[in-house]
Structures are given as C-alpha cells and as structure tokens.
Image: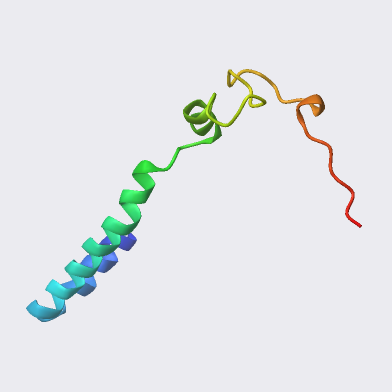
Length: 79
C-alpha cells in the first residue's frame, strides 16, 4: 500500500470533523512544501542559467565556461 493510500485508509476511520482537520493540515503542508518545490531550481545547470551574469564581473558569462583555478581567489592568511 502506498503512503497516499495508507493516509486515505486511516482518514476513512475518522469522524467527519477530524477528517476535515486532517484535510486542512494536508492542504497546509501542500502549500508549504509544494509551493517551495515549484519555485526551487531543479538542478545546478538550471540555477546557473538563471543567475549567469548577475553575480559580478568575475562570474562566467556563459554556463558553458569552465571555472578554473585562475578564477578562484587567494585565501588570506589568518593571524
């Protein structure tokens, strides 16, 4: 039995008011998690394509540009 089927199975045992509360909670979770997932980049390439050219002059202009050691800054020594 899938998780969704298991939730459905248990919800059928609840009194009407409790089932409505469970539905309200599920809808709250749906808004909280599904809404965020829909706006989050799917993968690294999608993210880079969205921000290319917006992070500064030293950020590659094209997502096909490889970042090499020359692109990395030098670490400062801490005293």
